[in-house]
Structure formats: C-alpha cells, structure tokens
Amino acid sequence: MTVTPAADPCVGNLATPVNSGYFIKWLINNLPFYRQGISPNFRGIETGAAFGYLLYGPFTICGPLRNTDYSATAGLLAAIGAVHLLTLLFLLYNQPGNQPHIPPADVTVDNPPADLFTRNGWSEFTSGFWLGGCGGAVFAWLLCDTLHVQELVKIAAGVWSVS
Image (cartoon, rainbow, N blue to C red; front, top):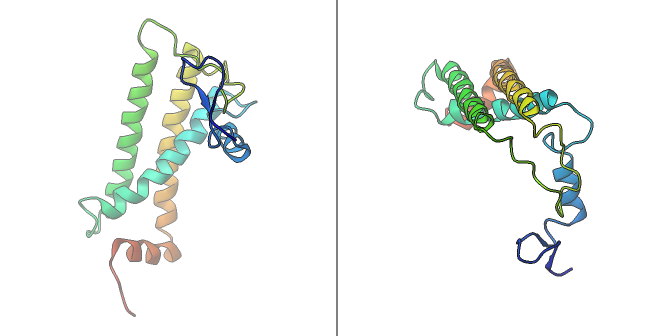
C-alpha cells in the first residue's frame, strides 16, 4: 500500500499503511473516545479510570517520597491532583464562546461520535473523567496495598528485601 491522499491532497489527511491498516483502525475505533453506542459520561468514566490507574504507579515509585512510608499516600494524592488538573483543562476547553471542535470523518475514524462534541456532551465527559480518574487512582492504591502486590511494588521501587 502506498501513501495516498484521503480526500483533498492540500488538507494533509493521508492514507498510510499505519493509519489505514485493519489493526490500527480496529484499535482506534474501539477506544472509549470513539466507540459507538456509549454515552459521553461513560466515555469519560472509562477514560478517566485508565488515566487514574496508570498515573498512580509513576507517582508512587518515582515520586519524591518513594523511599518513605508515605509513598503510597503521596502517589494517590499526586494521581488525584493530576486528574483534577486534566479535568480543569477539559472544563476550560468547553468554556469559550464556540462549541467544541467536531472532528470530521477521516481514514482511521469513519464515524466520530456526534453526541460527545456538544457543550452538554463534553460536560458529561468531563464529569465522568473526574469520577473515573479519582476512582481509578483509589483502585490502584487499594490494589498495591495487598500483600502479594506490595512485594512487586518494592521490587519496582528498587527496595530489595531478602528474607
């Protein structure tokens, strides 16, 4: 397959083997942001849960309190703080006078969700993102506090204990 323009060659939307391949199209179209048949609130909850869950680890293991007894709590608070900052940015994106930008259909995403790119839809996505992000961080904190995972967290943090 060669690189060809998807529509107007002056726009710069090109069909490449990467963005128009079957696997990439399947992967992108099954992300919560583009999946068909779910509400904007559920899109936000699912996206936020993934962000909160994934932000907890780096803040806990690489944060400034990583070698203290407070590393888990500091990682939780830092992940929730990052989710709050991202939620604030989503709120600011929805506040100016214009509607959120509706992306056109392209080579990868054939049918972007129209209900997400309205003021009400984006507001629902934002509130869902906040709830899911805080919940994902708390779930990661609870999961890393179990006996079996605590040893793995210590290994990942570089604290080796030989018993």
